[in-house]
Length: 178
Image (cartoon, rainbow, N blue to C red; front, side):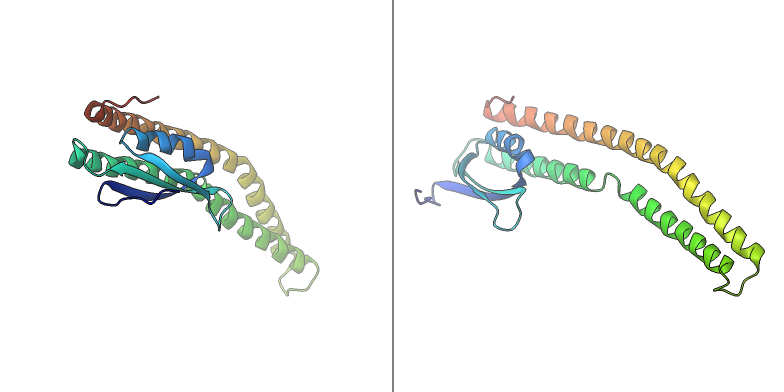
């Protein structure tokens, strides 16, 4: 591999998911970046290490660098959205699951006379725990569906935002975007 002349070229090192690699490369290419080196990441199987280069002296460099920051911010916000897609329902499901299971276990232990509560309290704990578990099984899928709809809406906003950024970049560089 050739040695990079840092007086004539800028470099950038990216760590991206393999599933996003082609899209990210296309977006960087409209900014004038070219792939210099691609390597599998030593630590993570689903990550690829990219080294990109671009001529140091380019037209509209300041504007392009600002648009690159906006583009990278969009990538990061999209990744954060994908990462946190079901975080609220997962936490809610785990909390209510542990709570209902605890009530059921306490009810069973009371019925087995391991705990010194009266029989009515044991039955009440068992019934309450079971009702909470059933209601969770009914409510959580609806919450996941609502969360998915909100995720799709936010993702669509990010896609529109990225498209607008790309159009601004194209107007400055004349590069084509697919």
